[in-house]
Image 1 (cartoon, rainbow, N blue to C red):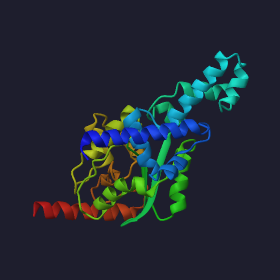
Image 2 (cartoon, helix red, strand yellow):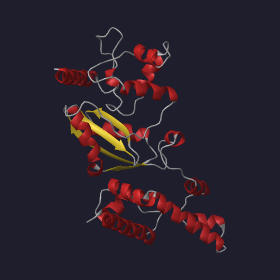
Image 3 (cartoon, rainbow, N blue to C red):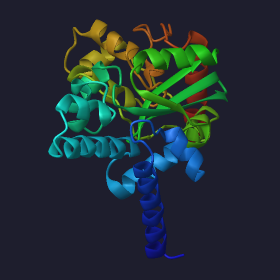
Image 4 (cartoon, rainbow, N blue to C red):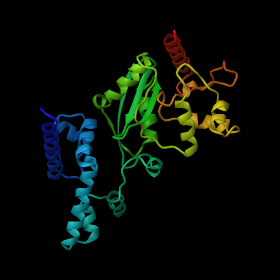
Length: 287
């Protein structure tokens, strides 16, 4: 099958998905239902749908509901009746959906992910358990721990109002890359991210990502590098709020004496193991 045929087949497939959404009640259709109906991982279905149409299945369904509302009003229905008939719980929900923006804007993040679809997976890794959560733009959360339910609960608290879908198959591409890093197959993780930060936090996180494998810095070192030498405590706070462990390597921050590891959100033993692995990798590379 050549690329044109493949594109044509994909477009035809998404056309069938669109028709299915139209034939169902758009207010109740879910990605899980679509994945089951079309025998595809919800994550992959959403990515394919958005690649072809420019919007997600959820946004397509919302657009159908908005158009249904407008049609009813044009036919003379009362606005209040049309709002509920189209499947909106209130007028505010109608206006939120009809003006919904793409991507995780700062206001969306403050709303705990309201309107977002987040896919996640929890798998075993060399450091215990690994949770990876992604949107259709990139990774929004990476956590390490020993208790699966605790990891999921932490993600749920952060993105309480998002539509959260467990999709081990769809997110598997990302978890495999991270596990490959943890097993020493590659020195760094250059993965797409969908995160939001203040300008200060972003400066700190970019400096963390610039620390070479096998090397460490202190909070004061980073403060100096961003041109704010008195901001060591603020740097520490930015590290503590890092949403994507490993990709933004806050484990490479140690105390100023160059020996004490300091704290680590995911446990000092994990930090010690990561630093030891990275030092070994550097030593082998410089042989």
